[in-house]
Image (cartoon, rainbow, N blue to C red):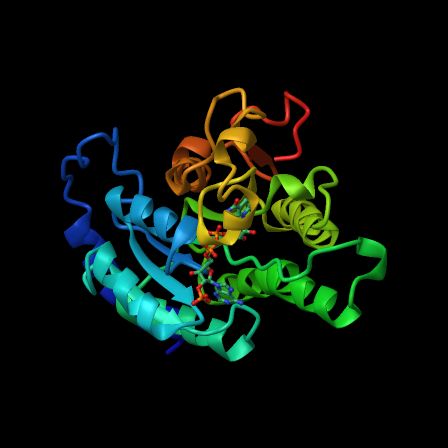
Length: 281
Ligand SMILES: NC(=O)c1ccc[n+]([C@@H]2O[C@H](COP(=O)([O-])OP(=O)(O)OC[C@H]3O[C@@H](n4cnc5c(N)ncnc54)[C@H](OP(=O)(O)O)[C@@H]3O)[C@@H](O)[C@H]2O)c1
């Protein structure tokens, strides 16, 4: 029996149990992911953790990943414990880790409906023309190739076998136009945006594939861009503030939900208006 067949029954039971309608938590209009299961990569903190929290608040059960096991365990506890979350530690660009994460998701929750490719790294700063080739390759491995490989892994193991399957890639506003010092990161996110539309064509109608492109969101990843000068930075943002991880989570939840069932191949810019104002985000 194939893994997806073996876990189908378990999943059916779990989704029957969890599809009894429950009221949405305060402040949320609906439970769009009731009975559904998601994998969110890079989710022990920051944007990924906020996405996992949002999906769970709307009824999902979620597999979260990150490299460090300790913070990932803490994230699982914060998310509500093993009833709703499982953590699988490893590198997003490691094939064995990907296959273990998807296998554990299926074993634990019995189905898979949503993949959020959220992991992204930006270890290179400086002129793009003189970038270290090895460092640039690593950025592309994690930010682009790993997202493709996660997509392949989840499609092989069942994503798209039911209605409502969706992938959301977390790109960046840096993938839409040049930004000083982070050209390689921007190029990788531009590639991820292209891959999003390419995959949308290839995987339709079984799986919708969309992306979000945030400007500066207040997380550890972006601290260097605003710490000690946030007041000055937000002057470039017509909406008067930097992004919060929950802003990204809300947009990802929309794109992953059936509310977006006629949307595929799109990249939604989340930038507090900084692009309109000509800022670099
Ligand atoms: N914050 C922003 O301003 C901003 C703007 C636009 C786009 N983004 C994108 O948003 C995504 C999330 O960023 P964030 O700001 O939330 O970052 P963050 O706060 O630094 O969180 C990154 C998460 O990913 C995990 N991670 C990092 N490298 C990994 C790897 N190679 N394999 C597996 N997990 C890994 C981290 O845990 P471990 O360290 O334990 O691995 C952590 O859980 C990224 O794709 C980033 O490019 C961020």
